[in-house]
Image 1 (cartoon, helix red, strand yellow):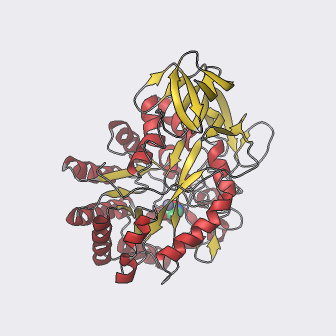
Image 2: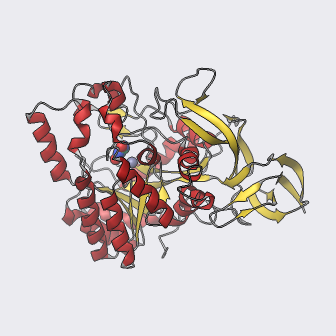
Image 3: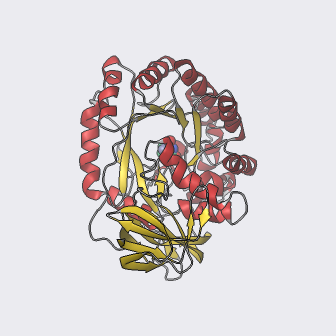
Length: 466
Ligand code: DUC
Ligand code: ZN
């Protein structure tokens, strides 16, 4: 067989194994593994690891938030994702009030298609459980959008328990998967009022507005609501030991409940809120907030044991000086969210694999394979199998880089289009040297090299048993 491309001299890493073999690509798909394969083009991986392209199912590039929009474009965010080894993104459609879901989906596709540097899919946000909205779930699924995001907090998004139940039931009937952002809105509002009345809304008080209970209560309730309707449930950005216990209980009962956490909850902690510099504090404002070191240890443990199944970046890049700084006096005015689309794979490799918290295979499983499986993209994405898309990351485990958001000559300047990174000055071990999307190099020597946007929309099949 004469392949289009053969990659040699590497260790292939999947969720199950580490194998020393060459791999061959034909027509953008993985075609063979073995030794002595021939091709028009041969790529020497120089002893690096080769993994499936990362799958990040939780990103918010170019997202409206009240009167603001996140600082990056879909183009810059997807290019940054590629530089970090992520070749598939799942973004959110957020319909305006009373807008039809189909119309909102078409608008989002029109916005993303010309800008997508990597492949992408979409979740649909449900900000109402009105009959006409729920009636659109089946046609949305027919268009390949099979997962539905709901919130238990945030004005304009929060659904009551009654609405959540109605939405969960409709999702279950249509064969969809529910994603829920779970925080108890009443606790949150009550605490905000207390802090406001006491005049303690300086950024350092932010975590008091969203204590761990605020999350775990909503996680508990959401799991039980999804259990009533038998709806598969994916809980986004879990941060506490108590939330993990809720997921563990549900899974021990055989319920289809899955938990995600994010790199910032694994690498950063709530000591950031004690910084004497309020700018450093607002740079760490995300929802839920960063947690204690002991919650962080529980998250790592849950990732290794399988109690949590997925790591999404929740990339949400507001400009520090232009947007987040509006919260310097009062944290309520600070838009929540942290950039993180680019460093996800390397942060988890450095803090997880290199520090012995998770295995090499589990790293690939959590960042590539499980997200692809849970969201109906497997085995096209997230694995190295004959027939899978040739989305490949040549990951150099010997590199040591210091991360920065601005060019300084000595550090690795992230490609995220935002004026800060919460990982400024942090040293990481290992980084993608070269990245292929469907057999085409899109990143080489750690720089984006494609003049065109090659990303395609990935319609998904209705949710099957996982
Ligand atoms: N939390 C964040 O930190 N950012 C975006 C949305 C969210 O729920
Ligand atoms: Zn999010």
